[in-house]
Image 1 (cartoon, protein in one colour):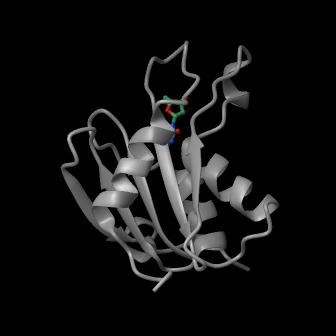
Image 2 (cartoon, rainbow, N blue to C red; image 1 turned 60 degrees about the vertical axis):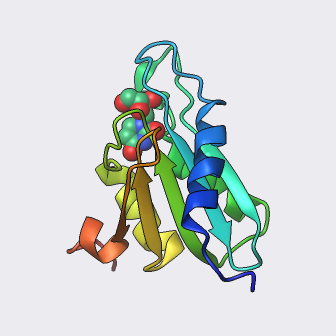
Length: 128
Ligand code: THU
């Protein structure tokens, strides 16, 4: 039961995560909701720094937060931006390494979404 994915509910969690974004420089807010295999939902948001490159993306905040809270198995991730933009390359690598080939739901704030796999997002990953 915990492994079931309610896509709309996960998008609503990512919309709530996006509300927590700290993006005073780009004004571009990103929310992520990561579902673990026990049904826990972990939020992530982008957090920008005065030293711009030290900014963290929402996806990696969610993944690293989940791992540091003891989670290691995941079933889906939803991402929300204003315009439904795709995740950056660095986040795709981290998704590939830590999530496995789970569905990635990429949505805009009106819940127009598409569902992709990590294989589609990162077809030739680096992994030694
Ligand atoms: N950002 C994310 O949170 N995830 C991505 O996959 C791409 C970009 C953030 C970083 C920065 O705070 C803002 O979006 C604009 O690039």
